[in-house]
Length: 221
Image 1: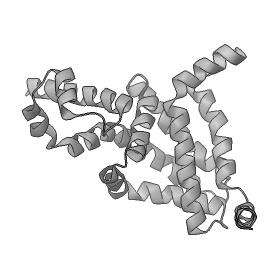
Image 2 (image 1 turned 135 degrees about the horizontal axis):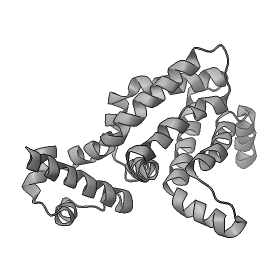
Image 3 (image 1 turned 90 degrees about the horizontal axis):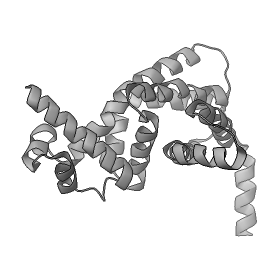
Image 4 (image 1 turned 30 degrees about the horizontal axis):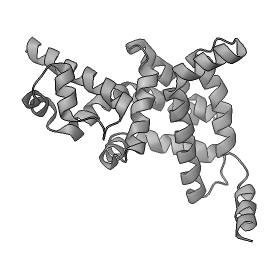
């Protein structure tokens, strides 16, 4: 049993690094088994197929992140009023906690999440929405309470723009912090990065809808 557990974790650790670096599509099971020093039968035995392995890799982070985010959102919803920034700050501590369970956990998690969208992994989005729908709905409900005038379609686009900006920033956090240190002599940590990112995201989601409508008129006229 100990040998099986070791093999299983080695497969997960190897797949995680390769998926985050190369993407899900570009990483073959052969590449994973070669790097992990295991055979394909071991992957099939523990995870069934590549989709099962992808979900298992991301689940290690989701199982810690989502319950922590849910607790933050439940506490927020108990208040009568709150701002859009406060909604997004609910994700700060759950994200930072990922670094405590694994080195660069936040960066790896956001990289994997971004790969799930850019690689068009529909099964992964289905998995997340199926298993964590209550948390997702809590977040969306909080956004709507903070900015009630958002219609469903506008909310859809703004949340996806937000996800893109958040994924790029956090997945590239190491490089961005190095650039900031070199160009501005400013040492930025993950905590500082999130503090800078949240106001930007919140402002984008809460931007006046009229600006979008006038933009459409301008480019069509």
